[in-house]
Length: 480
Image 1 (cartoon, rainbow, N blue to C red):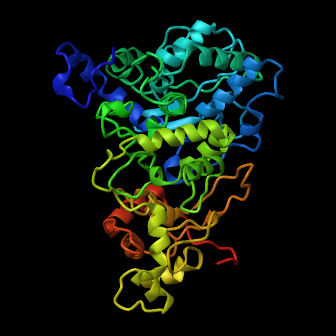
Image 2 (image 1 turned 90 degrees about the horizontal axis):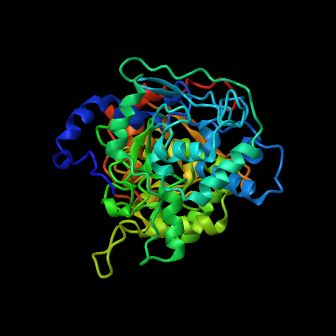
Image 3 (image 1 turned 90 degrees about the vertical axis):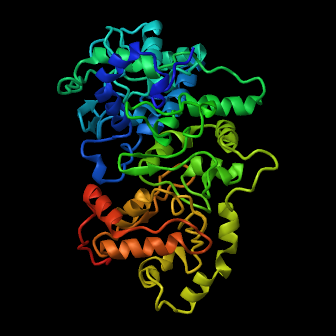
């Protein structure tokens, strides 16, 4: 039976109050910990894993055992390698520091080494860790490891994952530095109370009213894909406010994680990815780019190490499920214009015509755009397919929270390098040459042009992001 969410404290039993008070810090810890990839990562875009990590999967080559190969695939779905591999380290050997306001959590060695890794784990031990967040020796894991999501995993898939990590991964004897949080966060036993509030350890239950494809997508999104851990807002205790579409509007509604705004993966009052064609979502997860947009920040690593390796059938199932979350009922008032519709109409908008004619007087931000942005994104804001993202109808441009947009302008980012699209095309940083006021004006211009209808950005918002993201200094290369 699923427990009440902590964002509705009036429904919590009185006996939970003491436990809730004890785990405030632990809950906040989970809210910050999950997406912190490296020590000090808040000031830089997520770096790709070491070359060959995702391709190798931590093993010398394919196994003749189909169960091991099935587990290898599922480990990619779960993106285990990204958190359990230190920069320059062996796959799955741990050692990646994840900085939080309460201390640094270091990922563990999950190779089959019997001393440093999980080589002595039984299948039951492995399942308990994934579903309940408890290690073989009985100590509680911190929810930086998303076991509340992994709990959805079926017995068959856990068996395959166990086979892969025991037989398909090279054992590595490296012992990562143990996590040593300051008191009281060092008391792992407090996680008992947090789990009482937020952990539903039952596997995913098929919904009979939905198609097999929809159920497959829901299983992947809610479970091993753990999309909600970044894209769903969290309560003050650090648990996600909604674990599935039945829990209400917070599910996949977007959240600020590691200095980036993880976009909504549901229908909202803004143009969004769920309005794309199903095939466009599949293409985005395979390559990290479409005619509408491109992956950036932490999503680069997700595409490189995880989604590009998934089957087209699974990606389509994910798309079908996401397109259903928060969808208007038949006959309801039409939602926002779709990104493709805005992009199609952008060329004939007044902003596009004025930029083409060089009419920038009296239009704040337009001169900054003309001098710094139009060469790639064009005067119409439609960009170039799969090369320079469109700004017209772009969900990042139209987001309620402009944090990611500000950070992209200040620090730049590079697209993923994938098998289908190996060129990691990059947007340069402009933080060294544009003032806070310049950035605010050009982003406000983009968010109100070509059919976009988002709120203006202030110089104070830019200054706050610049302070945390540490925008690059002026480049010294002749390329400038």
